[in-house]
Length: 80
Image (cartoon, rainbow, N blue to C red; front, side, top):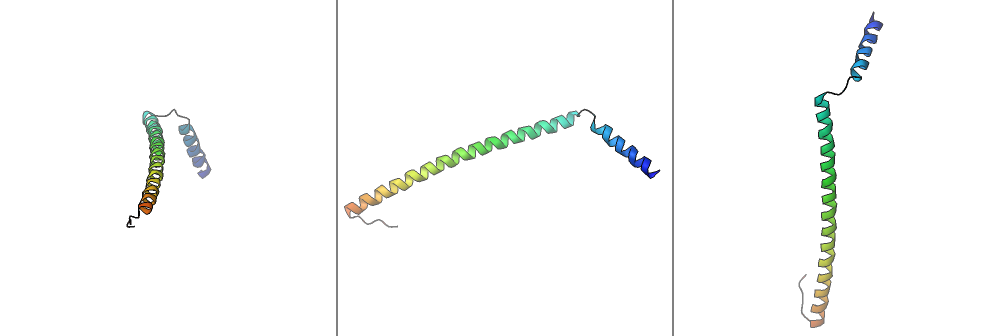
């Protein structure tokens, strides 16, 4: 008896898995795709901003070096 109920339940689960997706399932799948696209866009934006920040840091470091060299040549003390 127990074996039959287990078999029946297994067949019920198997047949439910073969049903076409419901509208709610499709909406959830679409939302997950949109979230994935949004996350990819955020990653791209973050990478672009990081590149800009690295570039600006390089420019500031170079300008700082030039200013220190000019001040050293002119004999002007620069506080650190």
